[in-house]
Image 1: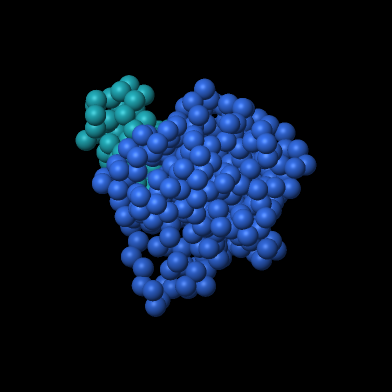
Image 2: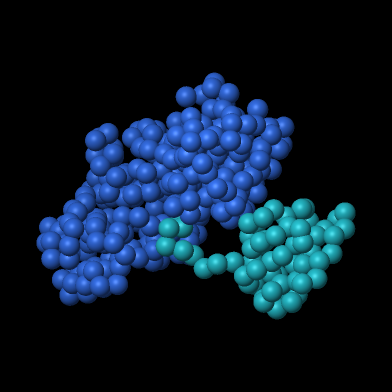
Length: 285
Length: 64
């Protein structure tokens, strides 16, 4: 068996994954996507691999490479449709609603004027998010109409075309933390709580993580959410709503886990490597 | 840029502060590390010869 791992930056996660494959005597070749030129008509060297695990930190590189590789018929982890769904918050919302998975209320508009109406329909405080983005970047909580008008005007004037999509989410008054569940092959393997005095509870923004037991409801919703987006390997972020209970906030198709191994006591890279190998062998769906 | 290769470690100079940055295992292209002296985030841009550059800032489409 021969697996390729594509990347654009070799971070701790990628190094841990390489070590995990090697520990299982699985042949793994790291490939820096920045060095590759693809011919869409010729599979070339990619024919040597039974599967490709994509770990690029660049969404553009991921989408480009996985689209081409799936065009050749190469099994990619995650599949392109899962990447497209997870990386776009609106696509995620649509997939979760269609699957009946509870998620915060959202309104969507396509310009600043209707965006303000969308905010007012959600009610204050509301959360404005770019549909594509990670690590809590450019996520804004607006507490009143003045703040909403300011953020919308800045987005319209300074933002990229993508930020023309006004995605407004209801603010969930969570208990100072959110929950992340790591799912590998439809199995929730570990969970952490991310706590912060700031309303953005993202470890990239300074939140601290602690291990969390996966209860029956968290387990069921994690399995349902992963299935809703068609992901093989995914990290799912939950908010605890005082009224509605657990809500799926977003899903991450290229999960970071370096700080969750010791926290949870779970060998996350080892489980990921084993599942990728099973998919490559065709013994896992 | 200085480079030393031994069986135990590979090292090069930090492009920011010139301190020695060492790797206990053979580094890979694109590998990210941090200078223990100045804390600058560095990226391996070549493994032969070993070359370190300041890692780029977070870009708009980066994430998980």
